Image (tube, rainbow, N blue to C red; front, side, top):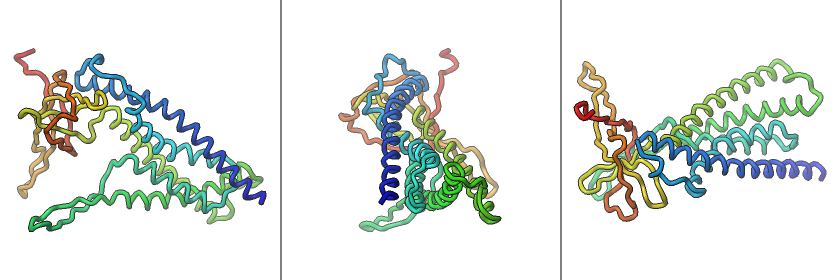
Length: 291
């Protein structure tokens, strides 16, 4: 009975610490959301006075991203390491599996799409199925095994009387293997978090365009609840390399003129919004004779 009370006491400490961390990250998210608006305004040549400040509702996406990446990916595992909870290893393993999966799936850098064809009403359609989440699930299972083993050794050394890293030859091998796997996880986490922050601040990973009055506009950034800042743009595909077999590789660009924009209420826009992937946003510049 005393063991069960001690275990639930540890869970209560984790919940309290995580609640405080979520509150702090809410304030950080609001600051990051405002910083993102000012950085994007500078990127697109939009005066700061034309951009409204981010509100708490605007920072919800940033807040959720910080909770998933830092909260589940760093704070929770580190807190478990340095807290004597005495929970069964199985519970620790399950907690870490879910925390790593939530953290890693917050930002998808690489994708493993699989294209399948289906016929509907005599027409053939291609459906893209994303398999990245399956890879992340397997990755979380493996990292959680390494963390759980490292957790047991670390807790025994930090809170117990065992002065050795691990017992026996295989114990030491498994310990150092777990350390290597955790270092790989930390490296991947840093790369993915850097990509997530870069996308949040610059907003150019996935682009959206809309056609209004025969003009194509890049949906640059959100200004208020319904109003968005739009920049006239041109879509361009450049051949970067040609091969001897006749094939070639290309690169896609969205070219916009920095400092030229309109602000529109997107709820009243009749044009269809199109999402573009693998398009780089580039300032088209100024004609030389106009300088």
